[in-house]
Image 1: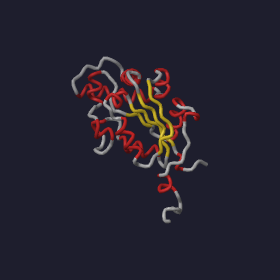
Image 2: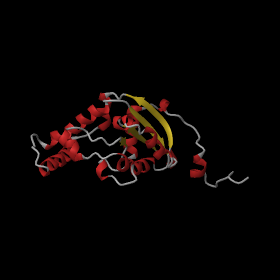
Image 3: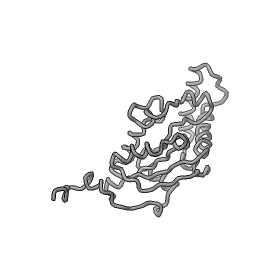
Image 4: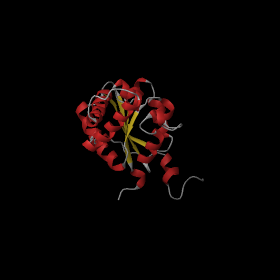
Amino acid sequence: MQHPKKERTFVIIKPDGIQRGLMGEIIKRYERTGLKLVGIKFGILDEKKVWVHYNKDDAWFLKKGTKIVEDKKANNLPVDKEAIEYGKDIIKQLAKFMTSGPTLSMVWEGNQAVAVVTKITGTTEPATSDVGTIRGDLTVDSYTIAAVDDRAVRNLIHCSESPEEAQREIGIWFTEGDMTEYRHLAEEILYDVNLDGILE
């Protein structure tokens, strides 16, 4: 069984985060928790891999599309297609957005890596993310304006929602050879059982 401190999660800083010069700020927020960066790639994402990455089914499309339809009706905007089609448009828009410029893909490792990154990142919609989260502090986009403008929500980051999802996503974008195994000095204070060696 793998030790809990070896849990990994996957993060992409999206094109909006790159263009706004937020890479350092975002990395700093994850890094200062004690998580260890073990994989990193910068460049333009492959569109086919983006579709594989998002891996959504009709139930997901319907759920998301229904919310879009409700938002359109609440804002007196025309509804000109079925809810499921609006849901599919989300991934089309995401694929277009995610390939519109460079991104920074990362693998972070540490105890509860998925939960820690999710907490720091904030909820998917920046407008309703808590103060103190990356999305809550650094951007103002919302589902409503994205729907009005017929585009993907610009929320700076993608992060895995579960350890299983992280494992699947990492496998799409990284090979094991892309990872760097190393000892980080912070691991001594975070994980060493007896804190041997602190006192001389």
